[in-house]
Image (cartoon, rainbow, N blue to C red; front, top):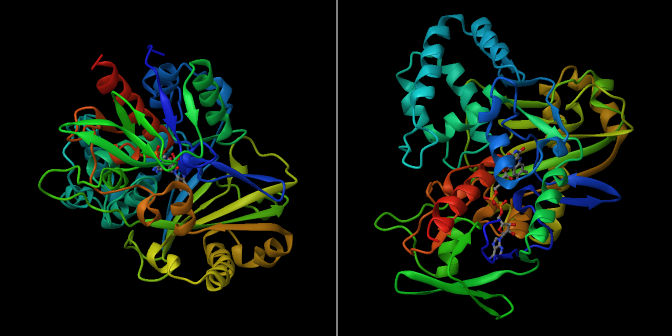
Length: 447
Ligand SMILES: Cc1cc2nc3c(=O)[nH]c(=O)nc-3n(C[C@H](O)[C@H](O)[C@H](O)COP(=O)(O)OP(=O)(O)OC[C@H]3O[C@@H](n4cnc5c(N)ncnc54)[C@H](O)[C@@H]3O)c2cc1C
C-alpha cells in the first residue's frame, strides 16, 4: 500500500498458517477458528481492534458477515460462569456466583484498565502472582485463567499479565463471533488485496536460512536453493524457528525459551444441529477440579481440562443438515511424534472415542445423548501436535510459540523483524495487528 516491493514466502500450499482451512470428503473445515475474538460491539465503538485492523488493511468488516456467539461457559467442577457479547451480563454472573469477590473483581477491572497492556514496553509479569494479592476467590481466578490461557498463553500454568488483559478484553469485554463462511471470509479478501497490490506471493516456498552480514540480514535462501536478497525482512514463523533459520540465538544473555504447549483437537460432523440435543452454547471451557492445570502433559492427552466448540451455534438458531462439534485438549508433542505410524493411527482412533465420551460430561444431558450423537456421526477428523508441526513448522507443534516475546518485533539485526505470535500478540486478530504494527513502525519508518 505504501510503494514497497513485497515478496511473501509461505512453506505450505495453503494460506492461513494456524488458521488455515482444508477439505475432507467434500466438507470444508477451518483448522482453528473456534472464535474470532474482539467482536466490535457498539460499546467498543471505533476503538475496536477488529475495526482498527480492517481500517488499516482497507477491508470492509461487513464482508466478514460476522455471526455473534449465543452464550459461552466456563465450568470448573460444579461451578459455572456464563458469558455473552454483553460484558454487563458477565459481571452479573460474577456477582451471582462469587458475591464476596465482586469488590475485588471491580478493583481488578480498574487495575487492568490502568495497566499499559497494549504498549510495546508492557512488563511481562505473571498473572498468577499479580492476582494472588487481589482477594479474589481463588476459584474465580482459576476460571478467569482458563479461557485466557487457552486462547493465547505460551507459559505453562500461567499467562503474562499484559496478554491476560488483552485476551480478557478480547473475549469478555468485546466478545466472540464467527464469519458466516468461516476463515476464508477473512483470508480471501486479504489474498485479493495482495494481488491488487502486486505482492509476489509464493506458496510451497520454504525458507531454509536467513543470511546476514554484520548487524544486517541480507536475504534468504529457499529450500529450492534460490537466493533472494532483501533490504528488510519480517519473519512470522516464530522466534525459535527464526533462530534456527539464522543458526544463531536472537536474544542477548538469557536464551530464548522453547514453547511446549500443544493440543489435540477432535472434530465430529453429525447429522442435524446441536439444538436437536439441547446444546445451544458456542464455546465451553471446562476443568475437572477447582485448580486449572495448563501445561504440556506427561501423557499423550490431558483430559483434565479442555474446550468444546459448536461453530453452528453462532448467529441466530437455525436448522442445519449437518453440524460440527470440536473438542480440544492439551497434548504432548514428543509422545505423539515418537509413535510408529500404525500406532499413531490406532491411538488417534482410541482418543477420538475417549475425547467425545469425556466431553459429554460438560454438555447438558451429554451421557443420554452420546449414543445418538455417535449414531448420527458422518465423519470424524482429529489433528494432533504432529499435524500442527507438519503444516506450520512450529517447534513442538506449539500453539502460541515461545514464552519469550518481542513486542516491538525487533531483533539484534537492524533490518530483521519478528511479527505474529512471538511478538506477544496472539490469535487471529492479535497476530494480524502485530504484523501491521511492525510494518508501520519498523518497515515504513525506516523509509
Ligand atoms: C486448533 C487451533 C485453534 C485456534 N483457534 C483460534 C481461535 O478460535 N481464535 C483465534 O483468534 N486464534 C485461534 N488460534 C490461534 C491462531 O491461529 C494463531 O494465534 C495465529 O494463526 C498466529 O498467527 P502467526 O502469523 O503468528 O503464525 P502462524 O499462523 O503459525 O503462521 C506462520 C506461517 O509461517 C509459515 N512458515 C513456517 N516456517 C516457514 C519457513 N521456513 N518458510 C516459509 N514459511 C514458513 C507456516 O507455514 C505458517 O503459514 C487457533 C490455533 C489452532 C491451531
